[in-house]
Amino acid sequence: MNSPHLKPSELRVRDLTVTHGRRPAVHHLSFALKPGAMMAVVGPNGAGKSSLLRAIAGLHAPSSGKIEGVVPGQIALLPQQAALDRSFPLTCRDAVLFGLWAESGAFRATPKPERVEAALDAVGLHGFVRRPVGSLSSGQFQRLLFARLLLQDAPIILLDEPFNALDARTATDLLAVMRRWHGEGRSILAVLHDLDLVRREFPETLLLAREGIACGPTEATLSAENRMRARMMSEAWTEGAEACAA
Amino acid sequence: MIWDTFIAPFAEFGFLRRALVGCLTLSVSAPPLGVFLMLRRMSLTGDVLAHGILPGVALGFVLAGLWMPALAIGGLIAGLIVAIGSGALARATGGREDAALAGLYLTALAAGVTLISWRGSAVELTQLLFGSVLGVDDAALLLMGGAATATLLFLAFAWRPLILECFDPSFAQAVGVRGSVWHLGLLALVVINLVAAFQAVGSLMAVGLMMLPAIAARHWAREVGGLVMAAVGLALVATVAGLLVSYHADLPSGPAIVLSAAALWVVSLIAGPVDGLLARHRKRPHLEG
Image (cartoon, rainbow over all chains, first blue to last red; front, top):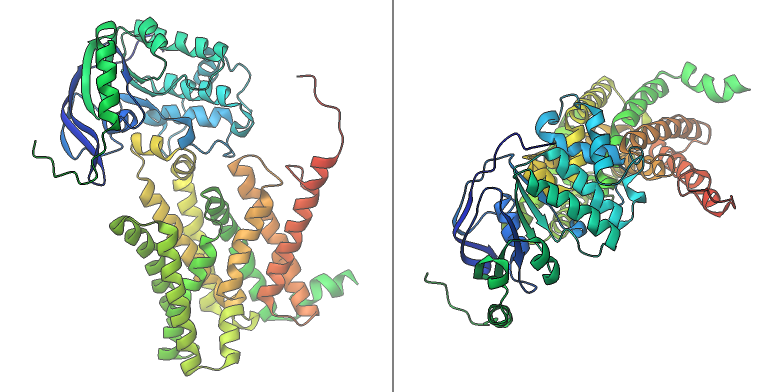
């Protein structure tokens, strides 16, 4: 878990459109995530931030456009907690072990149990190996998902609202984990709502409102003018929208 | 006394021994499937599929009379159509899978009842729905054994993917687990188990042997492996108890076994160590940390 086995490749999103039905959630978006970059994705609700991450992770087929530089098994996604069954009868050990799926697969023996303990220790869950997942608080559960990410050991990491509704201590600890990933040269793309946090931690930002409003150094991207444009875009919902010609 | 109550019926009557062997076999294979259905919040799906089997069984009955292979094959085909068809229909039309399942099984149930009442009598209908221990012949035993073997083999291979699919479907998809394949395999085995069980306990009652021990197991274990073992244990006890009750009280075997499983469920609800009523209301000092 010191440095990734593989250096991240550059992730290039070209003219990407992701739709739910025919409505575009992400509309003709282009940007690049350089190897080792740490970029925040910011935008109003419904701006397509989660859809973008899911498309890059290969969970949602784009309706047009391209995502280049994606190698299977080299991207790890932290999903939003609401998508998981948190009362599932599983121990923390087993839940984290799924991070080693690339090595263990469906049938092979689980490699090196001490790596699970190390990952749990690294996110502040020392001694949680035998605890049922259902007994964790939402902060502890988020730490657990980070431990799984640690084991996945992917060069490109996608985080969907990683610090939402966490107490200050948990947020600080998990931020430290993320900084360590950055230091190890991994690429990070994170959906965030807290603009102060973005300005403090992220060198680059993508401002999204279905279409890309701006992408680049955080301070310039998050200018008052850009944010206003993003808000106007997201509130526009045309009832009788025509088919997009672009 | 003990001999007369517990051993003699099986020692004296060959048909009861056969029913015992068959039902014990199913007790090993059906409850683990029930556990996975429960974990996927599909506890009622078994019931739906049991109804879905009916028109196939009825068609077999109309074509071949009470001849087992025809009934079993018919049931298998009809059940698989409902199980796989509802998933495919939901994906093709963007509707919800539970709605498609409800639509298909209601159609199937009405068609099945119509077919049986067209050509059969009420007695035969009862036998198809609720089973008869007298009906367990060699073919039925082989079918039960085959169903159990297929189920246990499938679970051995599908164990991890099924659990991952239930717990975190997006993650499963991201790491390349073909969730829908394992899911369909699970549903197909549910159908096979129900078909295998319907001679001994009837297609509707077979669901009871699948789901009740699975639901009761929640009060005995906290992990998937423990749940499966508890469910199998409870089902084995329910099977022996149910057949004995059925013999001594002269009741149909299917309902007797399911009622025994229900009794065990009530015991689990009250006395089970995990979230049982007694465990919840017993005052114990809280732990230090």
